[in-house]
Length: 182
Image (cartoon, rainbow, N blue to C red; front, top):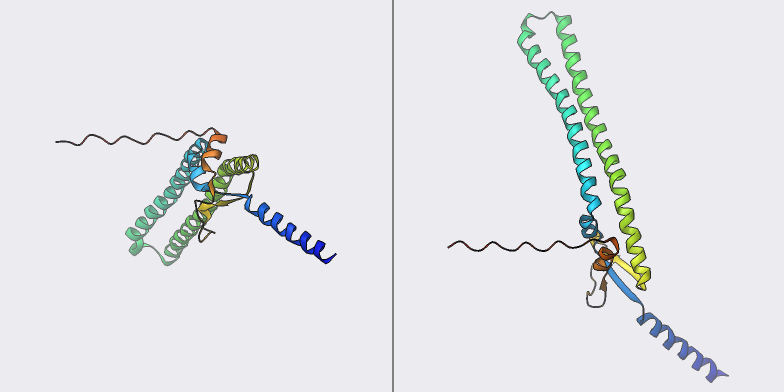
């Protein structure tokens, strides 16, 4: 009975070790994948336009502040105390409005970026999952996250070409160098 249990244990260990070695592991650089996706470019353009629009509004508040400040400096010596305090309060309010708008604009840009890039990231993640399952990968590491201190590229499979193919992304040919001038 003991021999049978030992033999069973040894067989189980051999089977487990063989199963472990049969597992496939891969890696991908998701930042490189997302950068290659065409919808990322259109999202970036929309985000840049939105940022530019907010920047224009912020600039108009700054111009208004500068104009009122110059006006205040020119007429400061002729103003009564009450009018001077009123002008200073107006300038402080404009400065506060500028700072509040700047903070809100930064938050809005972050929200817009998440809104525009969310579907792009989700599509990339879904393609990675689909390709990983279809090719039998147990684990696919994200090289761009920097979470891995080391991995042997020879023992892992780069999944990026497979995912690009899944998404229909064709690599652009490298630019040919210009002939050297004589």
